Length: 77
Length: 171
Image (cartoon, rainbow over all chains, first blue to last red; front, side, top):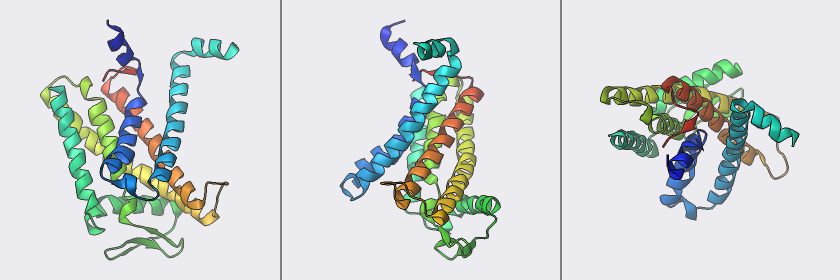
């Protein structure tokens, strides 16, 4: 297996909903001109901040759930 | 072949987004009415339909308008399920069925997520909560993103189990 395909297989599942969510709520409106509207960057910061925080927590919990030994080892270090 | 079905799902989502951009209150009753019914169960308050405007609760002094319909979330949930897990289906029939199932699941989850989001928003509105730079308006926006995204993650996790996908994505 090539390193590239290995990297693709290691993409956390939470990345898919995160990309879909940010794409639909930020990228598509930005492409349609919303980027010039007042308040867009505040909306972008809130959207990216809240969804990114939940995605990070979800990925950490998923990692700890599926790799309990490695998660414990990382904690004891 | 896989890309053709992903393109089909993306097209359906973009069509729905185009429809939503020009839709009024009456066009969105199919999603607003069941959402309001759920909000009424969760809050114990009644909402009354106001022609071409939205649903209003005099007791809560809160209005649910077309912008609250959650159609953008429905599109995200549909895309996540249909496009993100399409590679788990092998036959043409199974892929069409997966797109249809993703649509039904996205609709059902939108009703639950949106009713939850609105119920929490009503509670925050009544309490007048704010935290430093998080004004009531910003808090309302952040609460909406958090509720929607949490429901999206749970939906996708359930979809992954149903589809029999592995823990790591192969996109």
